[in-house]
Image: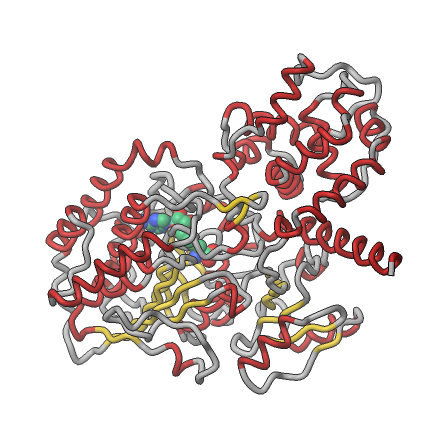
Length: 588
Ligand SMILES: C[S@@+](CC[C@H](N)C(=O)[O-])C[C@H]1O[C@@H](n2cnc3c(N)ncnc32)[C@H](O)[C@@H]1O
């Protein structure tokens, strides 16, 4: 009995450690909003008691550079409230991913580190040990690579405490296992069919010892099978043919297929927009909010590089990430454009048939962002949601009204807030009359789906929600608009609409009844909605249209600029959480 208990305990700890080990990579693209994290008070108290400074002392054998850099970053984030992503970027270290992952994990485990440092008394007993470096090294030892290789004094000191640290870590896991509990999503792997066929990739995995399970008969069976997935089994997704599903946390970051761009680590929900857009090889597509490029690259694969994709991204840094991703995944049919899509003169690309609108959103559906260090993140402020909603309405309406040959438009967010989803769809639908209709996503998925938009809205249950609890994905929303060419496109009337949004940010659903319903719903949602950090705030104004596109001073862009100016102060305070890493488990 006792040995059973001990072995269960050890496996619990090892599972937790394994899970945490993968945590940073899962969230690397749109990493958690740790920039606002408060300095751990207990830790600072320890520092004060010891009269310690973080300048450390000269060691004969140097501490590995990566650890030193991470130490400086973590210290700056905690002491000065600096932006983690900015510091990581500025460093220009060749292993930017490793740097980010270690810094993020150190910050995320702040309270556990406090506990470990207190329990082991390491800083009291080793007063010359730099406390910030200690945190980084302990993190690497317990949650990172789980080993430290260096003959430097600080590393050797931490290793002396390894057994104690592991003992106290077990205590943490036992006393609050919930801290380590998260939605146990499986590992989604999208095959880049520009590189290799799905069957070739499946065969390659089989050669590595993986075993593909038989196809499930229906969605319930499928969810059952992916919930219980264990090595060496994997499955092919029931909806997205190029998506493979592996046990949660399966490491792929060092896998050859991943490094050469043959597979992309992309959450299933984030694969829906490109899949549901329904573009075929030869189509002309516009991806209006493209970086880091998860959906653009998926679209290029669906098109098999035949046809054309305009991939528009306003933020220069994110645009550069997009470019790298396009290159790494061999997307040759994409013309990337660094511009504000609202300013794009649609007459320069009149043949666009399919449009993807995946705008900045609160990110409230991102399971990896729901908790940092076991603490629910602060609620996305209502003003922030309002501002996002205005922008989402603006950009979606721009897509619907300005591209005369567009036959299908997909709107998606990684948000679970109706304000960014049903309310946006309703608002835009109400201004396009019968020129567009919503395609019921349930029918496309052949009844094999559970979560849809709320019938309380004009869009009823025609749009898709992905929910982490039931679909084992990130939270996500997708609406499909289909053009009715028998009805002419209405005049955009953008000015009028935007003034409405600007003043009240209300939907323009005409009947009083619907308005009341919406308001009631809004109130309820404000009370109930999950707390989340702000994500994807204001991209920098780096409009720089490519040769193929020109900038026009439309009313929309004027309104947009006004809106931007109005919110500039607020936005300045918002940490830039748009960290992007190529090919990471994204989102959006
Ligand atoms: C949610 S992310 C898109 C994620 C992307 N679709 C993917 O799957 O990798 C939204 C992106 O839209 C960009 N963006 C926001 N406003 C824009 C605008 N007016 N024009 C072009 N891009 C914009 C943001 O900088 C951000 O990179």
